[in-house]
Amino acid sequence: MNLTTEQITALAPDAASMKAGRGLVNPAKWPTLGQSAGALWGECQGSGSKPYQVSVDLSGPGFKCTCPSRKFPCKHSLGLLLLTVERPAAVNTGDPPPWVTDWLTGRQEKAEKSATVKKKGPVNADAVAKSTAKRLQQMEEGGAALARWLTDQVRQGLATYPQLPASLFAGLAARMVDAKLPGLVNEITRLESCIHSGDGWQQRVLGQLGRMWLITEGLSRFSTLPLPMQGDLRAVLGWPMDKDEVLLNAPPVTDDWCVVGQVFTERDRLWERRTWLSGRTQARPALLLDFTHGQRNFPVPLTVGTSFRAELAFYPSACPLRALLANAPESVEPLREPVPALDNFDAALAARAEALAANPWTLAYPLAIDGVIPLRRNGVWRLRDRQGVEWPLAMANRDAWDLLAVAGGQPMTVFGEWGDTELRALGAWADGFHGFVTTL
Image 1: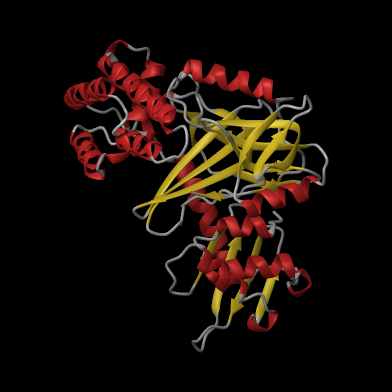
Image 2: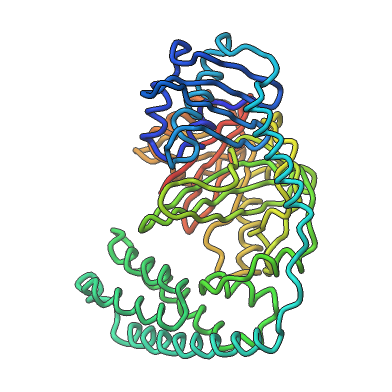
């Protein structure tokens, strides 16, 4: 698998590691360098007497280094990748040394063992039902309290909202946590941010209040909702579903999955990674949602601009998007052709409207649109489709200028996630794939 500098940057746990890795792009610092069809390796001279042994399994990619760093991948792994991309003549092709071979063999054996592990045996159904009923009662009581609070807000009006203290929202959020409703903390945070969002904040606040009311209404009728809608409501309420249950009950969907976008979010040292996939054969979107605490180190590296063969199990939903990897990614390779895309913004809006009708709590929906051109008008970035319709574009200025340069004034395919009012571009195809990994 041939990685690009953009993809290597996306793998870095933080900017400091990437900067330190770039400082190692010097063959003189590597007494040993080598590569084969599936691996890279090298020995990097550090401060000690013995050089660090660095191995990269390109099928994952996977990393190993004998340095004491707790970051993953470490600066030595990043430096080896960057050196291979930017100074390829310095990395000779050959057979890996024993310390690399042993590591690769161990990884393969571990993957095979993991694939053959049997699923959990039957659980105590009565105990599960009792626990579920108890939690649901707590949640319904919390939802009823929030519904009363929402009613008071509409009755009192919005004029004093900009003067409301932050402690009011913090207290409300704490009550939702006590009621086993952690997902509603995000809704309360979103409501508070709407108040300070500038011109038109009243409409955004009213829309968020309506969204929260719809959540409380759904919670009050939870037991009567269809199972797919229960799954959607559980997701927005922060009531997680056991992964083994998802893997056991969801029929696997096998395809060549293209990694077309990634968004990282950090809050109180908890990192969230949203990875958007597009099925090559079925043109089906999928979302892999992963979390890690502390460093931005995720167990399974997923590189934007690559594709892999795997089975996915989708969470129950009226509009299934979120999925789990049922097996480790196989046959990882760079994208060599554009992903399936819609023809124009009208078709994209129709697809999003259909998804929103099925799951009214959808916040971000994946869209790939062909034949669009990026442009900047009155200081605002936009995309224009073949019909001349323009959409606002949410991108950092640096990425937006890069997108403009990649397009070169010609139509291209852009992939992104559509929020409330704009498209956040995460990837584009123009004579090759270009990823724009976003950190919020």
